[in-house]
Image (tube, rainbow, N blue to C red):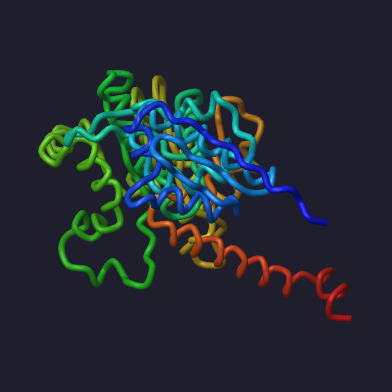
Length: 335
């Protein structure tokens, strides 16, 4: 069966929109052409799509999404690639609008906005809930955006301090072999949190807040026995917190406080005899209206595009191994 080829032209508002949409050396149009499996021809402020009806319709929807983003900010290659997932999932205009909001302007004048629909949902859940779990692979921005929201709340005087913590779980090296005192030993484990603070506040301001105790960064073990009122609390690398540690952390939250728990369940460094508190939290806490679970996917990765491909490759490998060890699968396929 031969499907009819159609041609449709999209008229852009002006040269600035066209230049932003086409990308450096028409790179974004090349990505679009490859993704929709149709020919894309650009002339001036016109983009013509030539191909099967379904492909052309999909291309028009993706172009419309990108043009709306261009109205509020400069788009990137990640935006173009993510537009395919957004269109396939039938995301609403309300969700797309969430990508335009500036959450924070950094010390260097950079406007921080969610870059994917998944990040936008994650941000909204942080706003709407007392405790939010951000679960997803590396590069999805779950820790960085949590720090951004914490700094935003501090600047708006919604909280009086920020508390950042993570388990100091060893992954190959023993803490005792590292040089320095206890703080020197645990600082490398907390470095991603420092990086987020330095980027959002600037190193000088961040250090001043740390010195005054307005911002506190400490290993998870230091949270025991405390009640944290009027605070924005972040537990990072939560997949390496035990079930008991997770309960301990969650019960530290006091009046006027908000917490974000981030982690990647595919990167658990705990001994096999210890259950991850992040894995068990969904089943235990499901149904509590003040708690939200936000699941970020490979499509939400905002690093180099190859990172998303690496994540998917490992996911496929894990799925194959699970099938090999599944008795039902073995009976059906190895008989």
